[in-house]
Length: 339
Image 1: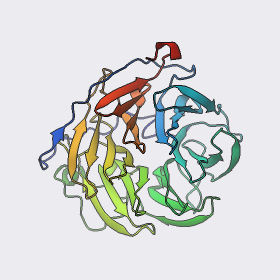
Image 2 (image 1 turned 90 degrees about the vertical axis):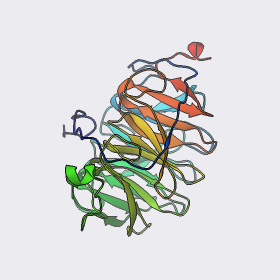
Image 3 (image 1 turned 60 degrees about the vertical axis):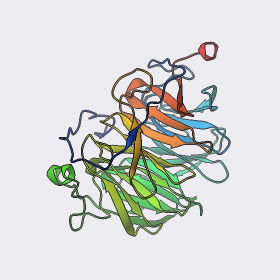
């Protein structure tokens, strides 16, 4: 089994505090409903690692250690699931990323098997591509996956420190990026723009695309988010290592709402941060713990068409849903216990 930034060594980097950023307002979102414990029953999780939401409100969760994808409605009611452990069609070793195309088909990256699988919305297997390696179309732990308005697929090839771009049928189109860590001191001082660092990565993990097909990549261990054109041309970046708003201790899941605001999971700071389309910090919420609205390694975040925010709370084996400044929660709860 290969080693892993998020699965095998989740004790990783711990950075010093960062310089002050501009002012922000902290969200105090309350929780309406709570529950949860690790398990493999329907509606339970064992390390949920990726999450996405369809236009119809169906929520898809990559339940990594249960080797499956589960789906729910907006209130957390279990719908269906598919997958089991293995390397055959429709099987998983570590489902790590999720994306939906315009027809509702589901694409699932597998961190251990170095491949992308395609399913219809009911979980019917449709095909796959990819294998282990460094060549175009090959992967070394693919994590994030996103699809733009022209149905082109972008994958963060984490241990190859690059982004790859494909057609919906898995035809390789382009790649960009190479390994280039930013030193702790530079990142601590928010000096991210050292020569040559633009467009390179230190374990990129998640990816999101806005309505203008601008590609946003969580450059996780460089503690920043980078922006690119659809062809991989570097545009801008924001972040830096630290505790204050606007900085990160491993930037993780990322998604974009209809207003263009960016929601970024700040993994070791155990919070969700919200940024303007230009990368200015707007607010954040959360801290470490298993209480309402707290997190233990938020691994991914998704925003639906109504502005509800879904967080894969990895270490707490749950999903939290933030709606209208309130939080719904589901995990190891039977339908009878959901109000």
